[in-house]
Length: 396
Image (cartoon, rainbow, N blue to C red; front, side):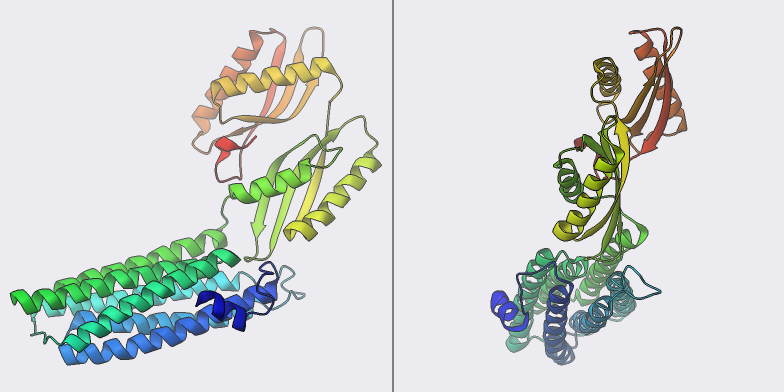
């Protein structure tokens, strides 16, 4: 069913990196969400009125808020697909995140409203009538929401959409709330114990938690999140695969929407190669990064010593020393200024985020102390910095 809808309504559906194709996926997801949620709202509202159940009606209005969320998602996708202009040179892709944030506040508001109603039902409980047809409708809605979760997750993973993945999570939350509602109706029928208000509280809290989770996932790219391991590997492997590039470090990626990223990286080049030759290589890599990865990449060129065996050996000593102190430490931009009475070892050291000022001070002392065991003339000129990758332990 999912593939049938995709093939029918998304032209060039395999080209998921294309902004227009991605927008078509978003529109399809929004339209399907609007239709399904309005259908579920009508069915559940009627069922809730017949059964006189606050938990069922809370679930119904949760579906109405989901439909409104789909409308906002639809508008957001359309606006995010607007091309870049003079005032927004990196496009409008972040509007998609803003739309998802608005959706999260709607979901939280709906949950809070019915939390108050549920407390009212606990204070003044009302009888719940039991009808098989109503129960069948609710069970059917569980099936629809399970399919919607599968639908949104599959499309969300295909186009790497946080909004659609959040919608899938919200749909699974709806499955839990409707299942809890069914439980309250069945319990009341067979035991004559009315737990409708209590279940309504649970339903409302689950809805609110889903809204908070969506807000959290959406705020991360807006605030600025660390580079994922997948993106880190893709960019560094692309750059380091070129002849004339010795290594890379200091990768920073700025996200301007799901299909628009700007990145900068330091590329190490041999210091004995003509600067124009290295510059031509850098230009070619930047063009290829845009073509192959869809990333606007800016490369800073760092000349490094590659043929002086003595300098190379000292760098290895420094790297081994850092690794023994903490395997998460990494060294780059190494230079050495030799002298008769003093040898300056100049380098940058990437440290984990938990290294506070006191721990950094201790690290400086320990690095110098350990290196001076090899040669008392060594003086460390270290620049300590934090990394920009999600998990530093697996990067070099």
